[in-house]
Image (cartoon, rainbow, N blue to C red; front, side, top):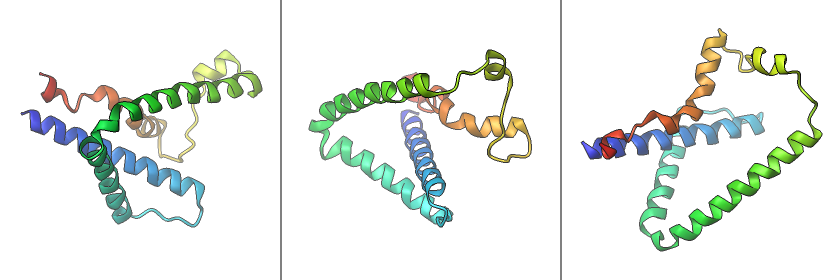
Length: 132
């Protein structure tokens, strides 16, 4: 039962990261046309990097994790400070009641659910079988 949880976690995280990489590539390059085989290659690249980090260079993992922690904290403030100081002030009504379907999905519900995938992955519990 433990193996199934880890397999689903690796597959899910690999797919999500490959999708995010492909989405960023499509967003930043108008000539890029995403195809499924490219997503598959990116999935395998993400999984192989994770396996490499956890097996071959596992002795460096605490230092890499510390570096990532520092980058996350600094990045949080690097984004938050310009947004707060330079962004236009928003009305509370607009912030909490206006929803925008920027992806062109057929309904607001579909747009909401597509955007929710990346944010709910951490709380999904795909590796729950491992921790039971």
